[in-house]
Image (cartoon, rainbow, N blue to C red):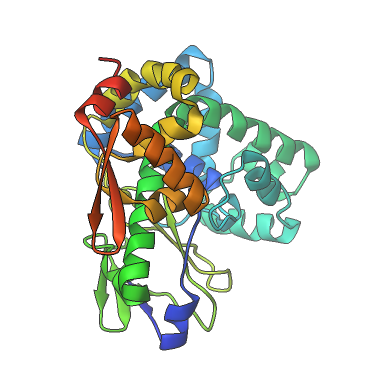
Length: 328
């Protein structure tokens, strides 16, 4: 179990990442390909990705990446330096800028007591060619295993962020943390969650950043080194069949982009459950005025219904909106 104690000041410093993280998605998806966690949710994705990797001739390259981030209690922190960095260039730049000393130490820890593969030895030496090859491999893997599912990932991360924003506005930081059940348990002034081994994460006056990850399964993940800025990467509530829904919606969504525009299509995709104007703005990084305007246009077209709940205006996709989104 992982335990994180909070003081009042720690609660005030709590952060929720504004987006998913490029490198966390890469690492955690690679680990999912090595295990059977959340089989009902991810087995169809596993099968599809393995077929694509084989078809593209990327099997050997992917196995080399798996050696760097095995499905194990420890993998090198330098692979996941971000605090919610969705941009691939920024995420990879941070990885490839890792100091040689950190590369050497973390890879030595990963392969402690066993032989280090030749590729890892070259990377541990900090050579520019080895780093360039790592960056190219990550990009090629991401393009096959993660990028094709970007719409489903963005929708899940956006919905989670909107729900967290609503909780924080309504009940503050304690209510925000309490809303992460069952993955995280808030007990008084302590946050607890499942973990491969017992560990206490000391904040020591540093802000904790909560990062949603589409490919995080079973339990949350944090960095190994205690001196790094603390993060907690947590699972998203995904339902079996999401891949079928994503495949069915992808063609329709592309057509809707041309009809409604990208942003209004994203709003329509987001509104499977009631969401406030503030929630839409937070999830899609819009101003409240823009979110309200897009919701109004969709409402006038009969694709969204709106109703008041206290001081909030909530919006939800109608049956017509769902049919249009699904291409019916």
